[in-house]
Length: 73
Image 1 (cartoon, rainbow, N blue to C red):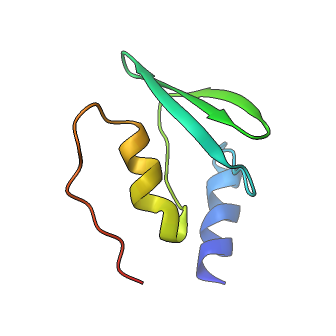
Image 2: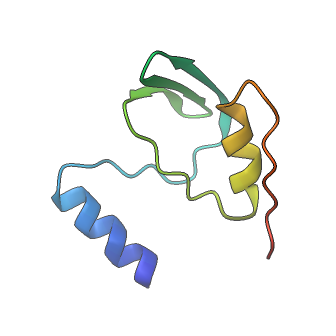
């Protein structure tokens, strides 16, 4: 419920929310992220990662070096 409220407020401020998109790759080009998903590709200046148990895996896709990130359920 809290996440849904945040999503609604984010959209009201002009943001876009994409659900049920498997992230296949993230490529950084300067300050822009090119996100390749199962539903198409997107470009963004800001990405908010809400991938739940997959958050660490998705975060690592945007980095060249290994991240010391652990997901604790």
